[in-house]
Length: 55
Image 1: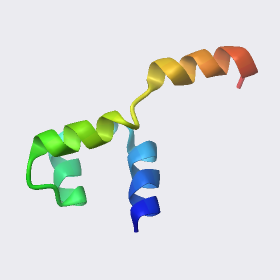
Image 2 (image 1 turned 45 degrees about the vertical axis):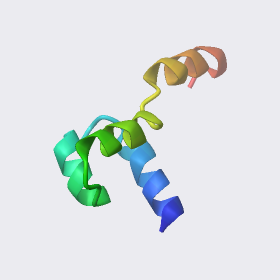
Image 3 (image 1 turned 30 degrees about the horizontal axis):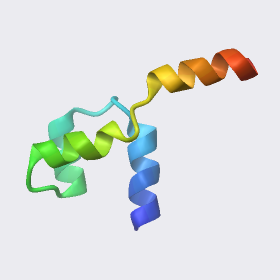
């Protein structure tokens, strides 16, 4: 389950409203969801990597 949640967090990125993610993760506080999801939203790193490996 833990790996599945991380995979989901990575795939969902910033595509799902934070309030819905809070419900899906079953977090009590939205701030917990924001902090958790911030681990997966790394568009600037993805863009930099894409420039190097040309995906």
